[in-house]
Length: 367
Image 1: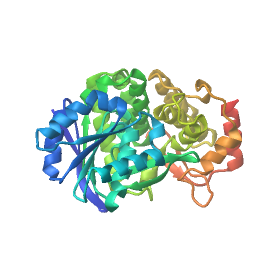
Image 2: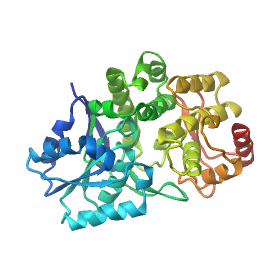
Image 3: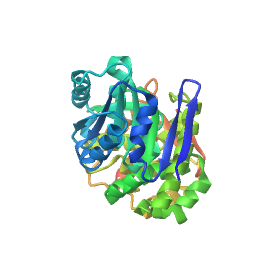
Image 4: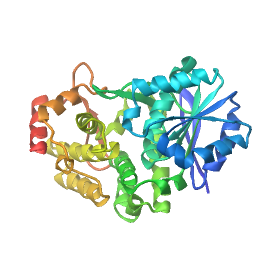
């Protein structure tokens, strides 16, 4: 059974997110329905070795002999260097304004290929075929595309919505356990933001999804996409409610930059620690109860995710991390912007953050 979730808003063309098992063979028909002149698959070397041939075969079945353009696996590929490599290859292959890019991979590929699609000839179509849990529940939906710089994560990018998203639960079976857990952090985040009942399910019967249970994963992906699609439809460019999706990210992004985007800390692990920090800071300020923060931390740890900075094999300096947070793209006029919580399922955005108090909180967290 395939579930179709509509993503629509007044500022962009609506599109469908297809969630189900064994969907990759349907890629060719999905592309054919869009009638592009040419098709290119952008992937990373690891994913291409596992799923590239199947994707090409599906496309060939509908008349598209798609070239496979690859970059190295890992966050380091979200760079000017690799963006230029992909764009140059698109030009070399002779793509035109009616051509289409297939982003086959995790969040790094979705961001990189999506930004390439946004820039090439001032914008061509692309579709997302997310192959990680994190990408299926988060980055493939909503049109955010970006690369990183040494000064921060996702600072160079554009909003460019995909034409389709194909989330095949079956491909998650090829993921290392750490990557499944990393994606689970974003699933937990969706419950923390606006669905306490979903969060409770994730901490109970649904917890099997963090260990790879296919049925729990499917339900978790569907509900996460429903939550994200509703928020994106209301606020495409993060002028208001969409900022809630950044729960844990201002903390987490700063930690990622300090680590250097290496294998010490995955994005999902950074989000997990960041969400726990956001709830602990919310409790410190009296916005939510200490019990709520403890429940978030317990669910995070039960999923095999880090919940505290001490779980990361890196030493952090509070003042440096605070400076990273102040330079985050969500900051406005030099003012820190944080997503905090009044309780599980009750996140809110605040720009009324006392930098001195936050520095003291970080100092205590990093002690």
